[in-house]
Figure (tube, rainbow, N blue to C red):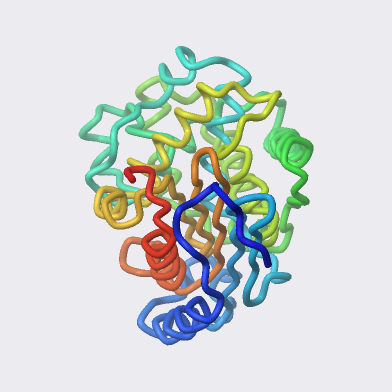
Amino acid sequence: MAQGSHAFSGSFDPLQWDVWVTAAKALVHQGRIPDYIPSLGKANPDWLAMQLHLADDCIYQTGEVDQPFVLMSVIKPFVLLYLLEYFGTEVVFSWVGMQPSEYSFHSIQQLKADRGFPRNPMINSGAIALAGRIPGHDGTSRCAALCQWLNQLSGARLFLDAAMLVSVRSVGNETNRMIARILAQAGYLDSIDLALDTYNQICCLAGTVDDLVRLGLLLARSHQQIANAHRRIVNALMLTCGLYEASGAFAVRIGLPTKSGVSGALLSVIPGVGAIACYSPALDSSGNSLAGLFLLEKLTQELELSIFG
């Protein structure tokens, strides 16, 4: 592995990295594997994969890098990006807000307090509202179009995890259905069933840490097919809302736009530089990957990656 000459100011030490990975693996047993979706509950808590792409000559992988996983909520920034490209900023933010949430990612209390207007695109209410706006006649065509768009632009090889989708559908998820009902009553959703089916399918898009890093690079660097203004918006909302109610604390500790998923997926964007992707399925009390956040904090501090200098 070679180190980039000017993209970041810290120095990457693979030996130090191995020490951190060992410490991260010890942490996972303090976390929990979510089992409310049966297939998620089958994940091995010892799985840990991470990939860094800090510059074109500084790419590093470790762990079970070939292990695929579903993105779950990590897809949310890319739904926002897709719709910003399709409809523009003014239209999209008539459907969803920009404010951090004070409550958990699936809070009905927050949505009721906001009179049915979803507070931001990174929590379930906002993502369900946006899923209801993805172009396409049904959930399958909408998910396929989003997947194809992301793969073409990023070079990733995302795919729909059909077995996970069956598992998600078997649960029913009454909380999300209640969220959808409130959105519909407030006029922010046309079809509850279509929005929920679309949401379930896009959350079951899957890939490896390499695929996730490739998605992150869409937000990190200029791309001729993506407006820079839209990238900035998505990065800003990841920073302020991407880790739910823990976002503020981690903006201080990590200082990078970051999004987590209940599968244990974690993505951080280093604007102008690159991306860091992690998969470790044991979660903390806020639903974020324990080992992923631990390693991310170590890396950002050691390599001085925070956008705040």
